[in-house]
Image (tube, rainbow, N blue to C red):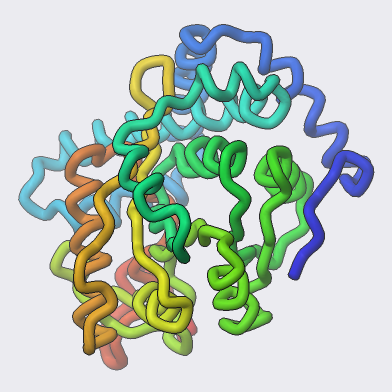
Length: 305
C-alpha cells in the first residue's frame, strides 16, 4: 500500500509546480479551452516524436480513414489533452462545489444499484479519467492500483489530487493481487485502468481494433477473486464541462474463459473510442509488445521487451 499524498509530503519542486495550477483554478472554462487549444497546437508541431506515435496508432486502428482525418483527430486530441491539463487547477485546488459543477454524471444509477457489493469501475484511458475518478471519490471511498515508478513533481500532484476527497486506498501493482481482492471485499470500489501495454510477462494477446494487442487480463481475474461486478465508466470533455458516463453492469462476467473476457473488455473500449475518437489517449505506444516474430510497429530497432 502507498500512503496518500498530502501537501506536507510534496517535494519542493512539486509545490513550486503547483503554483501555476493553483492560479489556473480562477480562469473560466471557456478561456481554459481557448488556451488549451493554442497550447495543443504548439505541442503538436513542436514534439514530432510523440506526434509520430499518435499517428501510427491512428493508422493502425483506422486504416480506412483518410490521412487528413487521422491528422485532424490527433490535432484535436492535443487540444483536448492540453485543456484537460490546464483544468487540473480547478480539479486539484478548487472547492468541492466547483468540482461538482465542473463534472456531470450520466447513468449514475447503474453504479448506485450495485454499490453495496464489490464493484470494479472499468475506466479506460480517456483524457478526462481523473475528473470522473476524483468526483467519484468525493462520494464513495475506493481503491486504485498505483502503477507509476516515477516520483516526478507532476506525478506527486496527480496523487495529491486523487487523494483530496476521502483518501482512497492506493495499491502498488508490485504488491500483487491479494491487497486488491481484500479491498474489494472490504467494500472499496476499485477504479481500474486496464488498457496500457505493460509488457509480455503480464499480458495475453487479444484483438484491439483488429490488431493482436498485449492486454493485461486482470479484469476477469479480479472480478472472480473479489466476487465483484463490473461497471464501466468513461469521462470526456464536452464543451466547458466533463461528463462521466456510467454503463450498465456486465451480465455473465467473468465467464469461463479469461481470453474471451479480455476480448470483451477490448471490444467495449473500441466502441467508446468510436464515440469519442479524439479523446482516447493515443500518445502511448499501445502496440509496442508484439507476438514473437512480428516486427516493431513504431520503427524501433532491437529487443523491445
